[in-house]
Length: 131
Picture 1: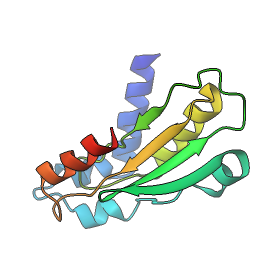
Picture 2: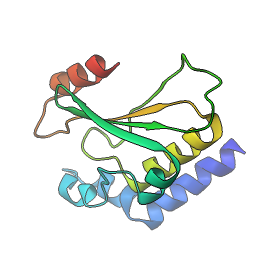
Picture 3: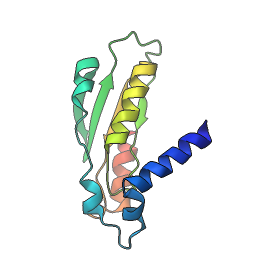
């Protein structure tokens, strides 16, 4: 199953042109950011409780299911991948929807500052503070 998922992921990256964008030198981060989605899709607001907060320069979206949380002391910290230059993208929101729906564990999506406007030390400081 993992092998199939991995193959589908690489196929989607190639089909969407994302692989090509990351292969450029320098990476066209402005083009990559065109697919960023800073807010959850409307279906999140219909099914979950959604809140925003800011910590340092990181925007945190909290998503909580109205289902009874059988693990009240748990929290998932979701740091979307985007090579520190883009994100969150639509596929991150799709994954989060499934995680919250299937686990009923609250999730924090950390939309940290991105390079090249921020250096890696500043980005890491933000992520560390959220953690």
